[in-house]
Image (tube, rainbow, N blue to C red; front, side):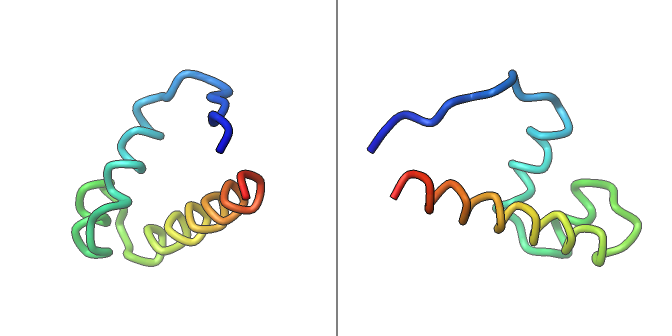
Length: 59
């Protein structure tokens, strides 16, 4: 397995979303300050798509 390349240093917004990834939807919504769980669901879907892309690339 190859090393993952970090394209840019993480920014606070990315770090908060990474931390929220381990929370339940309701808790993540509150943690991130989203007005609606629907917004949090959009981010969760995008994060899942990114993760699948990494898995496909890494093998």
